[in-house]
Length: 159
Image (cartoon, rainbow, N blue to C red; front, side):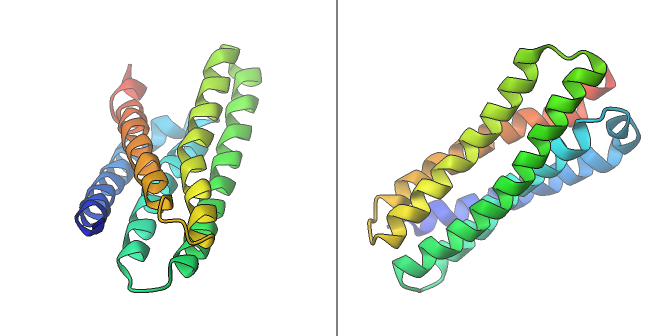
């Protein structure tokens, strides 16, 4: 029932991750001028890769509980990069005088994108098929916010 969704999610996330990597490489010098942008860039790519590996894992014939464990591990790894990005955002706020709400908003939005995957993993480990809906919510959230991050890294950084 979910195959088409996850096939599309895997393809779209791979394409968007590639675009993010190109955006980072094109503007690398400018990105490195801002203390918080390298970690933000890494977190953006990691979230897109979270979609990719989760979508591919869903397509593997396996027990639902095993899928839950895999997604939990993928989400925790991504969360680690997100926490690193959040620390950089807070430090940058102090160093360059970013408004507090920008750093806070960036941190909260990053965490909110990963949370559905963690919830999905727990539901799947408990043999609840409703976990697929949580993954779908996470996929959509990451797509929306990653496009915004790629825009910042590709266009806004040059202003």
